[in-house]
Length: 196
Image (cartoon, rainbow, N blue to C red; front, side, top):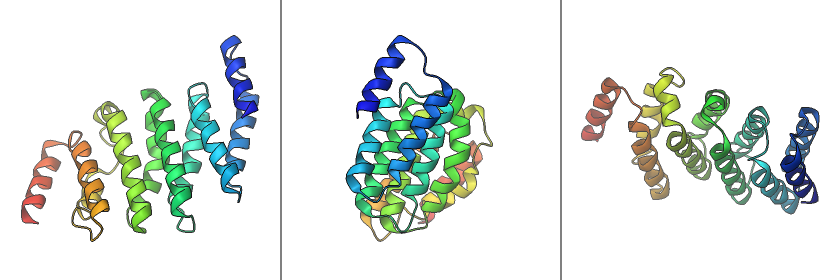
């Protein structure tokens, strides 16, 4: 945490050199991969505290690592919750310019996570919902950023999931997603929902 304090003080006085920032982000990622839960939790806290001063490319690199950790079937639920929270707070720090790159890099991982265990699915739905909430305008201006038809299908099948928490999060996610669908996609979604 001393490093975080140092970075915050340095950023108030001057911009942080790219090489130093990359080394710091690499250290955060190394600590995220540590076997000790306290070390991992401190890394997540450090990322959250410094996300506002890190450059977009470094935030995206961290978000990619966190997305891999959230969707890792060998991870534990407790750690996955922490990683999910960290990636969602990282998303809130990104601007619309960097959003397209973030979405292209993490979205496939999150979408693949929708077909894994219930706890992975829940976390992926929460992160995807945060991306829709934060970057709806980016999806509007870049219509082909993701495969919306496939995502409607993936989220739609989760609406009647055996786990009520998954189906509730799928419903919330779909509500945020519906805003960026084309009229054709929205019509198809409504037909599909009526048929269920």
